[in-house]
Image 1 (spheres, rainbow, N blue to C red):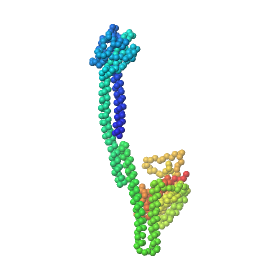
Image 2: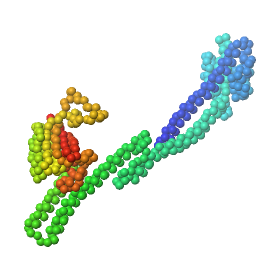
Image 3: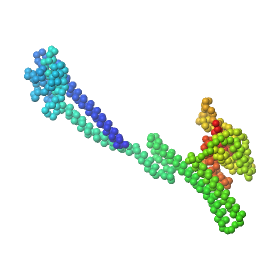
Image 4: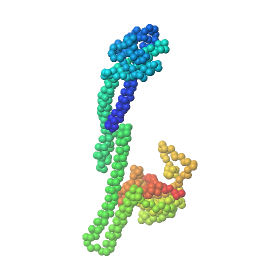
Length: 487
């Protein structure tokens, strides 16, 4: 930044210096030429007013008035129309000024000529050749000249000043720009050092400077938000790994214990069959857990394949209700269909069956003996691709208007209600997380892994829908799955 800034500033100084040099020299040349022209015209006018003398009697006063009190470096002389020095007229001491043929020709035609002539010394002369006309007749040619010493000295002084001050200004400006850039970019260095310190084990740290309202502050806030997301993701992965390890460790421990006890002594064939059957149950449980984890990981990676096709939801709800009756048979829980409408959606029938079966299985597990689980299927309207849900009276969001030219999308709404223990309000936001259990002991006793609701939500979202829950502790819960109907 400092090099670019200094380079641009140097180019700007060169351009401004060139423009200033051009304007200065043009002004100095104009001053010299205008002074010579005024002297010549004043002398010619005075000569025209003198009847007997060609040279004004106050010529010296005239020169002093325009050239100053000391006009030793100013020259004048009178020539005859042929360009020779007129012997009748006085002239200054020194060698006569030369006149070019072009200047003499211009004088005979009635107008003056500016020329720069060598003076035999260090500085040249600026000469103005002007005709003196009396009664419409050229009587003499006046040459007025002055040394360019002052002009050249002014030019030299300006160039010296520019050559001295420009590098000094560039050095000062470059140093100031470097200090300013270093100060401005110091937060970037601090962010870099902090980012190097922050690793997977220190994701709770945050970058400083996020409170400032500038570009660096916005960068710090964005990076802090990214770190917060990474921290949440790492925490979820750690929790997921720990829960998965714990879920797999339990059946492995049971398997190991039963096999070790069985191998300590000889057993009857029936005892071996019992141990193998128990081991098979644990293996099936681990296989189911692994399948669920594999499905969720594929869904997260977007690699889960779905078999799309028309699915009759009313028939699917009836089949799941029958399976629910089998699950609830040993606990005297009634599983029934409350209402049913013939509706069709596009999706994967096996996955949708798994969704409903997970909801029913969850309802049966948390419903005490003698309770009731009901299923209902109905058509529901929606707006802009989302189901219509009532908003609280204090909600600041206005209702979404429906366009008369745009058809309102319709949804299949599947509700699974139970009369179970319910879910505490503080647990509702987390029940769809992986391996989360409201009552950990009861869930393990019932055989749950904490993945059923997470899988159900994943399947619903993959079909363009969603799942909502309403629960009252001690009174039961209602899980509602909404899926878009087929066109």
